[in-house]
Length: 267
Ligand SMILES: Nc1ncnc2c1ncn2[C@@H]1O[C@H](COP(=O)(O)OP(=O)(O)OP(=O)(O)O)[C@@H](O)[C@H]1O
Image 1 (cartoon, rainbow, N blue to C red):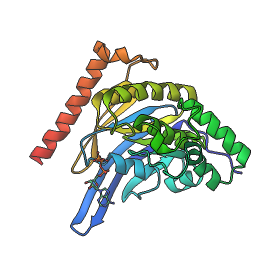
Image 2: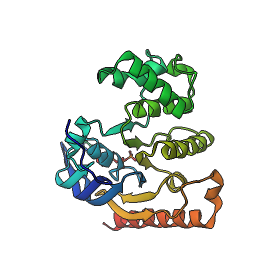
Image 3: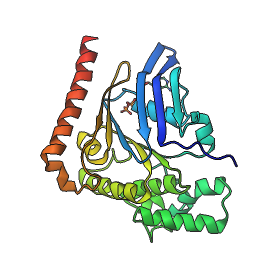
Image 4: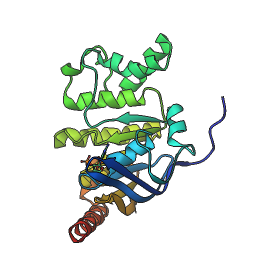
């Protein structure tokens, strides 16, 4: 096996653009995106519907091809990175198979990758523990709450131990109290596993609470209007959301979103 390139840069996008050709003409989902994600970063992408957040995640995952600019993932093309299983992907809906138990859902990618039964069992137990679902492996998805299902889908994405986790609005459909709880748990999980996380959200408090870096985007065409490096400490109790430092970053995100919006109105 060839060794991985040694670098702390996980994602590097330079002047990245993606225009979809549709029956109604071209749709520019992304234009001029420059962004570097370093190992261990927690990067949130925030912006209104249609600003290209999901498209950017899909480009990293090699599910879409850019039409201009360049992007590398772990120093490789997205295609080569995907083949080396560089990332786990968590979708907006938990997308668990209803006819499989939670542990069988988590084991599915491991089965496909040809891991032995013992290895599968060990990894399933480890990831269930990471998302606090030990004891629920034999349940079916419908027997779990929405928040627990989403944790199970995070466990599935963690099971093959990729360093990069791509999360597309994983908690968007959950109520605020459950969401707060999952945000706290996700930060603990991030600290424990030292993963690099790219996280799409519509929520300003969620983005500020979770991130080391916040990428503010605006639509038509989708572009980055601000990149904020958070000065907040890594250890973040929920109460941090009432501190002046937190509110200041939230204010800057809101300003960035507003600036993008007025561009849209005047374009
Ligand atoms: N496969 C596709 N074909 C054509 N247009 C597409 C395709 N995928 C996305 N788009 C368009 O690209 C733009 C960006 O979409 P994208 O889903 O990335 O936005 P988003 O910021 O994730 O939105 P949301 O917050 O609603 O999920 C939108 O205008 C969308 O309609």
